[in-house]
Length: 126
Image (cartoon, rainbow, N blue to C red; front, side, top):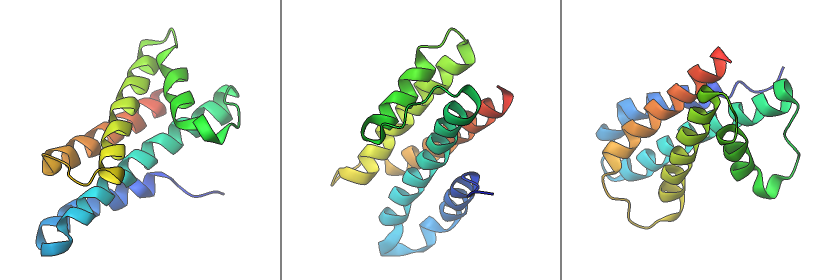
């Protein structure tokens, strides 16, 4: 059995509980929370398309955008919502992973945790 990608979200939630107590490392932990929340949701969405729908091509260079688009282009409203939420979560992850300054980081951390959880719960309903 492979890695349980929900464990990334569990880790992100655990880190969110301690991030305010670690002083100078707080920003690094908050950025990590956003990144792990995204990857937890993204990989599960990717695996859903690959394993259940059998529709995902193995093009790794564009896989993030391909997964989002495949969900957004669906006729199923729940899949469309998964795609839109995953797209927004990806934007937060890109900010956390690439930008030198991220405004409202605390709010973005909480938002990313909620969005990842929503995506995972919706995938389980499909």
